[in-house]
Length: 478
View 1 (cartoon, rainbow, N blue to C red):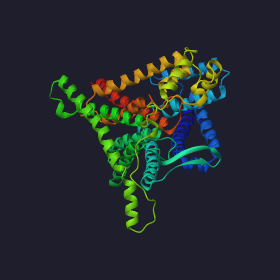
View 2: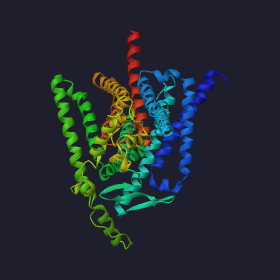
View 3: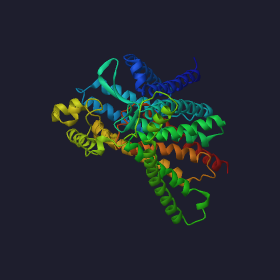
C-alpha cells in the first residue's frame, strides 16, 4: 500500500470518527437516551475512546508535523504538562488521569486540527456535515424540552440501573432542564447552534426549507437559553453580542467615512447598547413565556382535552433567589482549589486524582466532602497542571486572541468573503471563554459542547489562513 493511499484511508477514518464522536456525545447528553442505554454506555465509551486513541497513534506517523504546527505546539506542550503532573503524582488515580488526557488529546489533535493540505471541498463538507448533525440533534432536544415546559412537566427521576442516581428533567426548580443532563452546558450548546446556524445562512445559498428550519431552530435555542436559568450562558451571550456588533459596526460601510476614533466610539456604544438590550429583552420574554403552561391548559380545556392544570410558572431559581449563596458554592469550591494548588504549585494535583490528593494533604475539606468539580476551567488548569500548565494555557489563549483580533481589525468585510464567517465562529469562542469562568469545560472535559468548541477553533483558524494565503498569493503575483 502506497503512502498516499494509507494517508487517504487515515483521513477517511478520522473524518468518520469526528462524525461519530459528535453524534454519540450529542445524543448521550439526553437523559432519556442515557436511561435507555444503561450500562451499555460504558462499553460505547470504551469503543469511542479506543478508536480515538488508535487514530492518535496513527496520526503521529501520518502527520507528525501537525503536533508542532503554530496552532498546535502549545496544545502539545500542555498535554505534556498534564502528563508531567500525572507522573509526579502517580499515586493518585494514574489510569483515570491518562484516560482524561487521552480524551483531551482527541479534542486537540483529531477534532480541532484541520490539515490545510487536504482538498478544501472535503474539509468544508466535513464541517458542514458535522455541524448540521449537531444543529439537528440539539434542536430535537431543545424542542422536546420546550414541550415539557409548556405542558408543565418536571420531576426528579432515577436511572434504571442506579436508583441512587437522580436527574432533574423538564421544568423544575425554576429552570428548564428538559431532556438535557445539565442546563448550563445545554444552554452553551444552544448558543453554538445559533452561531452555526448564522454561519450557514450567511455562508452559502440554501433552499427556503433549510433556511426556515435554521431560523425556527434559532428561536427555540434562544428560548432554551432564557428558560435554562443559566447565568453563565446569559452573560456569555451578552458578551458575544457585544463582540459581534462591535466589529459589524466598526467595519460597516456607513461608518467608513467618519474619523477612526469616532468610528470606534460608535462601535463600542452600539455594542454596549445591544448587549444590554439582549439581557433586558431576554428577561421580558422569559416573563412572557411563564404564562405558556397556563395558556396550554386553558386551550386544552376549551377543546375538551384532558391535560394537566397548569398555573403561571415561577421562573425564579430558589437556589439563588431565596437568600442562598449567589455563587452556588462556587466561591467556596474555588477557595479550596487554590488552597490545594498552593501545596503543589509547580505541577498541580492532576485532573482526576485531585480529590484523593486533597484528602491526603488537607483532609476532608469541602470539595472532598462534596466531590465537586471545580466549576471554572481556568482554576481547573491551575489546580490540575500547576504553574507550568497555566503558563502554557495563557500563552495559547493570548496567541488565539491575537490572531483572531488581528484578522478582524485589519481585514474588511467588503474584500474578505470569510470575514463574517470568522466573526460568527469567533463569537462562539468568546462565549466559551466567558462561560468557562463558571463552568468546567474546554480543558479536561469531553462533552459534545467541548468537541464543538474545539472544532470551531480549528475551522476559525482555517478560514483565517485561507484569507491570509490569498493575500500572499496576490502579493507574489505582483
